[in-house]
Image (cartoon, rainbow, N blue to C red; front, side, top):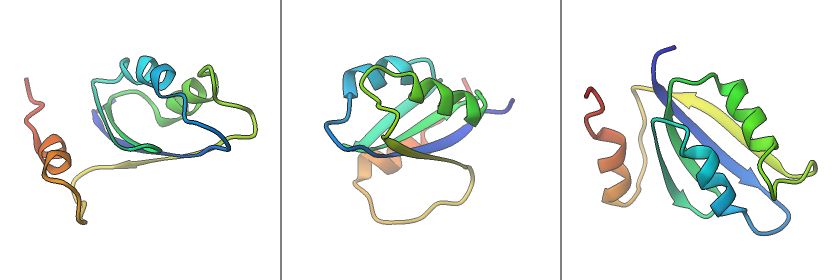
Length: 93
């Protein structure tokens, strides 16, 4: 599968298990956390595989919600420069 971006947003009743999620997201080609509950992965792994990995992450409860969506190409908004730099960095190596 071709590498692309996947946005991951959490709706969690308690604290986000950031350290556990970092371990899971380290299996992506690259990732960024731009908010306490929002991440972007750069990956060539299927989105349903990520869904299942996140669900199994220690600290994520069955009642916790999260949303994943793929995107590539067009994106727009107002974010800090470091987020735009990360999105636009050369990954062809």
